[in-house]
Amino acid sequence: MSQAPISRDRLLQLAWKALRKAAWAPLFVVGVHGVLSRILGLYGSYPWLDVPMHFVGGVAMAYFLGHALAFAHGGGLLGQPNRALLVLAWIASASTVTILWEFLEFTTDRLGLTRAQASVADTMLDFLMGILGSLAYAACARWKLPQDPGSI
Image 1 (tube, rainbow, N blue to C red):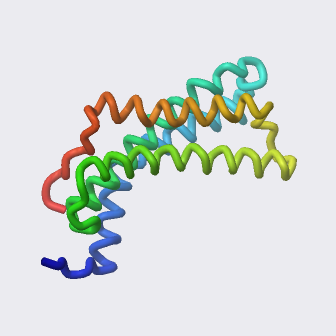
Image 2: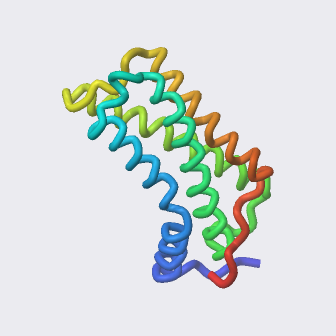
């Protein structure tokens, strides 16, 4: 039994609902990061602050992407995937954001705009902390995507 294709308007409606519900988390973390690094300059004095920030960033992205996947699934955008596949997509997408963030740091360092990546070991620790943050959130949520918040 095939499902009718989702309309562009429906897709935008689902995306907007996910953004309204959960985008605050990663935006908050990026904002705190900006204040700590650019305004207060604390990463220079306290370089260890980078470690918990990457962990919290992983938590925030897992929270946001969990809601985005729940809206997409509840709206019929994903069809009827296996629950384990949804959880795998959830963790993989949050981990991918961690990797993309590190590429952004690498790029801004190469352009001379920042000095975010101190070493390969620092970058690997950042990867680890972001991925552990996403796994920690998923584990605390008992590997369940957020419930579809009612009528989508």
